[in-house]
Length: 183
Image (cartoon, rainbow, N blue to C red; front, side, top):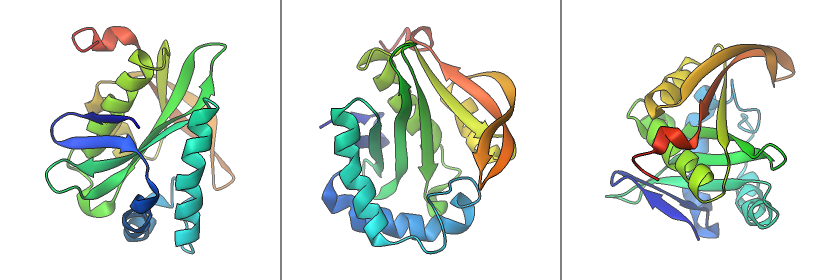
């Protein structure tokens, strides 16, 4: 099991017992998350949470994704999720995504979790590049990417489909040199 911390938050491999807390966090956050994350919808169920958590082990086993719950170090509270997905081993890169429960948004949690996950991808998984794509209208995600230290590179036209609609997206990246003092 992977666990990484900056002293304030902890990201770790999901466990089955995280399901109730994750489900509660998603249900609390549907209004804010559902506009950008299609998996988060008004009828989201505990069964979907259980299936998601169960699928993380399979993804990790086959190097298809690395998902982590985000927790408060002091209290153990479930704060959100972060993960590496869309792994491309031919070019040694991955996508990084994150979300934070609504009641804890705006506290630097997403940026800290993104930085921990990016460092893990670059140092432990050997990626040469970790990318963040944020829909042009998703300003909170863009702010988190910028606060995390990711470099804003470009606006990519019609790069994402959000609820079936093409969206321009801002591309951010991390490379190992961004962590020279950490790695």
